[in-house]
Image (cartoon, rainbow over all chains, first blue to last red; front, side, top):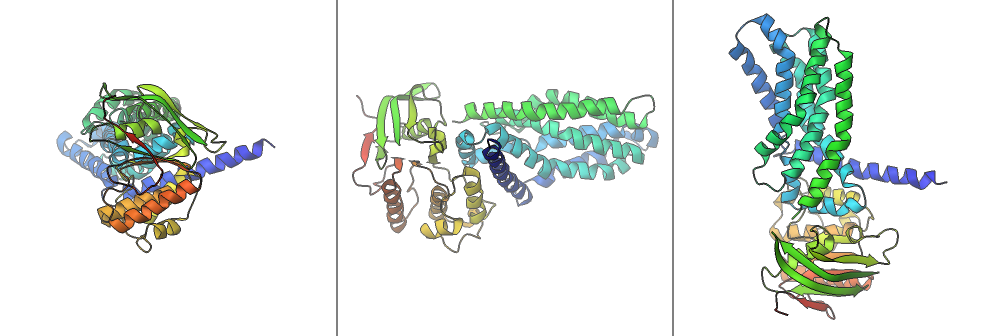
Length: 237
Length: 202
């Protein structure tokens, strides 16, 4: 008997969050959403590397996964400052916070993170295999890197959300967020790259770093939104 | 249902803007907050909504029942920003807030008709004029039900006819047992509303 209203509440909450998710996805696609900026930056970095490193194909193949990961990490950080700032500028953030008595603010933040990831970061993951070709990577390495990016990049968004929430009131917080967030993303980078290498280089393991990467993402999916919600609640003015 | 503010204090950037403000609003009652610029009208509304921490005192609701246990869950807050996305159509904006805020009231079309924006729902919000934006933002109050309306300069940018229409909406809200707190410079056309004048010594 008690289960029914409970399930009703869940269905209601998921519907509400779906509405928020769809709104943010729409916004990221429409003009001024900036979903493509990350991909273009990612493309620019990867395409430039071979010119800088030189035409040593073996070297490119060896550093490929690391370069893809670093470029993806930086591209992820690029759009983060708009995560809450756009909502703050038009007053939506007030209403999102005001409604936090109805549904947890952390859940709202998590939904916004997922929408941001789908709109701005998932295109990077999709573009990564193509850019892997530029780095002369072998198919297995490309697949492993794309997989680790798919699993690892949400963690960057979740940490970034906490940084974005702290810097929400600052007019040009973009760089500050990157500086705040970058040290925290290092573990994600380390395990992402080592899993990618593990798939191609024989003695190195793939599964262990990959599982730690997945654990990091799950862990940060809880910590990031909670921290961001706390910062947003105390950061409104 | 009653909205109770006791001995409220508010500060901005560490400086006290007001202190010792208290009021009790029963259902069907309105409070009009007036005062010169910088008297703390907007700060008071944000403190009442819970968007700013109170420097002193507290705000509470009584008799809100299960649906509206706290001020934040019982209140609509219409700030001086419209909380609408310029890239989305008016309908998409209102549809989102209707879904997100819960307790659905009027449908989006009905709400737009009520604020005389019928037929403009498909336009991007960014294409509307200042007054039309404000009216679309007022429609946001109608798409989900909240017993308490906290309005910050609600009629800014509205023309005469829209002001009167909005006064009608506010009267209707009060007749239905709603509570209203409005900070304004312009007369809102509400008879029998309580008045709070801020920024006066004593």
